[in-house]
Length: 335
Ligand code: AHM
Ligand code: MG
Image 1: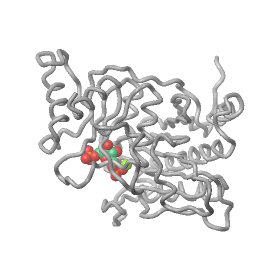
Image 2: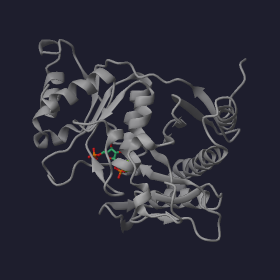
Image 3: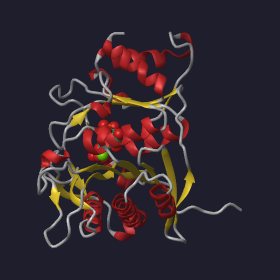
Image 4: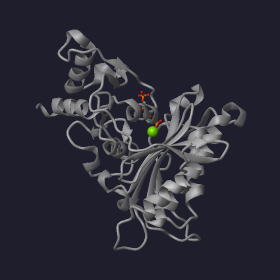
């Protein structure tokens, strides 16, 4: 039987053999993975651990927080603040940045996360996850400010998510393809279960919240109308639809068997560029998808090239199988 490769060994080899990741970044990823194990435990306990239900509070985005949103946020902060690898953190659940307290050494990395993505699925026992993105703090000045975080996604040095589903799986890129690690609960460690993940260029499966159809813009409507027309329509083939309402679960399916995911801008709140957040949802997912051979755009532009103006910026998201994403992007550009 072939030897099992743990996340630790995988990272050590990336550091040693390929010189891809510095020691501090390796430590950071291991700490995030450890935090995800803790969150996974809390998720698994569910009602037995008293973690379900609303926290009766709102986050900066005006969304009701669930108990697990807050628990996951605290687990990630507590795990990461003392190791000396980080300068600051930012999260969907916190208005401003969290600077590493003075009592701990400051590192050179910035960590952003959506601690519990797919919050509406927590109480109904459907897959949810943690999404994270790592940037380097720009050099040349002491201290750290929100401005330091406002870097486009192509500057990420690591990104990934951990999905809490039938299995707990950590999916990671450090810019050398995408690897998946399944949590072995008996050993308490993540084990490499897939390397060099590749998204097929074509697909017959789309993911979008169809209840928003009447609010969409013409290019998205056209694309979905053509999919729905099936064999008899201009695409000449039948499409299938999936929508989990947890981005981690929808992206995980796409990384596993292909597909396209859309959460486009719509006319409900015209001043909002979309629902999903650029810096800790779209950027890490966009990079993972690109690293697996797929594409990610906001309709007009590669997501990873969008220059963020603020921490909690929102963005339209179209990602997945390359040929489909290029088609929808082409419809937006009128090509
Ligand atoms: P959250 O971070 O507050 O959980 O919101 C993000 C989630 C995504 O995971 C998912 O794709 C989307 O919101 C679902 O939205 P909707 O309920 O409109 O279908
Ligand atoms: Mg989210």
